[in-house]
Amino acid sequence: STSSKASVFRSIARSRRSSRRFQPNRKIPDAILGDILESTLRSPSSFNLQPSQIILVQSDEMKQKLSKEVMLGPGNQFRTRDASALAVFLADLEPTKRINRIYELEKDCRNPNYLNSLPMVSSFLIGEGHAATMIKSVATNFLSEVQPMPVVEPVQAWGYKNSSLLAQTFVYAAESNDLATCMMEGFDSRRIQEILRIPDRYAVPMAVAVGYEYEDPESFEKTPRLDVSEVVFSDTFGEPLRLEDDSENTDKTA
Image (cartoon, rainbow, N blue to C red; front, side, top):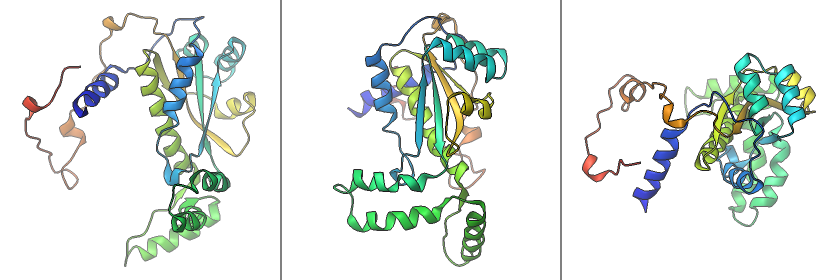
């Protein structure tokens, strides 16, 4: 039911935290990893191009090497060393090369007109190449005065957005399996690309340490969050959002 789905997700989203420390020398069963990854790959992406890869680092030798030579700060270093695995997320900087594969996946479930237009539309909107992006940006900015036009972003920004959706789903999927996580961006991306032999075609927006919580979850104090009224506006920027109290019809037990 809708209420039970909301209750389950509420529990997962509100119990998730960034783990400060993991239990060392613990392996995540393959069945659990497989479940997490299958759920992760259901993440949305622009044009369904799925422009990301994941490197799952599990060997102690490689985790030690990344901890010592890549990670910034002692916190990221010992989390990388002690976690059961480190999921390294890659953003494809040449995503149009994926179009043929996506076409094959979707040819029996998409409208043929959509599929035929996919190469042209996606190539225009994804900012591959500095010069091409600049030209398209000038053109769309000019035409925006008379009709709605897309904002052409650099391909790295586009790729990071899509890979971040994948990483967030990974974190919630891990939480649903009672695993702890910590999203990290404090690392030398040049070194991690060299050590993990990542081609220049990809950038590394973030990594997620995943494993078993070292500390007692009951002892945690939740880090504070801004109030909804400080973050969410109604209709226009700065306009307060007023929500009616409908608590009698909302299951808040989680």
